[in-house]
Image (cartoon, rainbow, N blue to C red; front, side, top):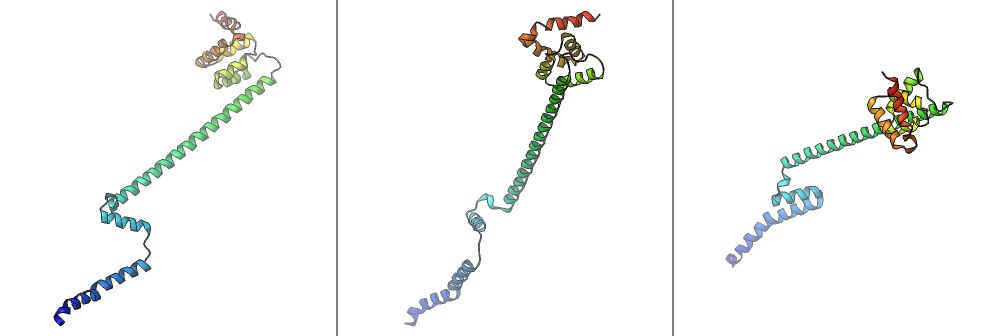
Length: 187
């Protein structure tokens, strides 16, 4: 009878000395050791043999993440700089327009000065203005003043202003007189 139950005794000994303590140790670990979801997922991935779980792959992904963060930061800085430059240019254009309108309102007659320091500063102002705005200002001046200013402006800017003036039906008939008067004066 002892022989019949000897295999039971051996099985009990194996269970008592090996399997049961291992199961108890595993249960204690599960109960008392907190395993984060990330760690659990990486353990399962390692068991399955996923290629993205190696240390080298993790370092590569971290480097790529850092590169993307740096690129995003540089793009944000560039966008902020472009926006600041745009605001600065808008403020400068508004200031120039306000100055031009103030000088136009301060002038007692529609004629602009055709010599002196005011003439040079007005020519400089007209050269910096948009062609449409500059054309709108000089429309109200007399023919001699318009001719003097157009001749004193930078050639490319003067051509743009003259094109804008030529597009205006009210000013179109005055333009040949203004441009012709300039040709008559030059030798």
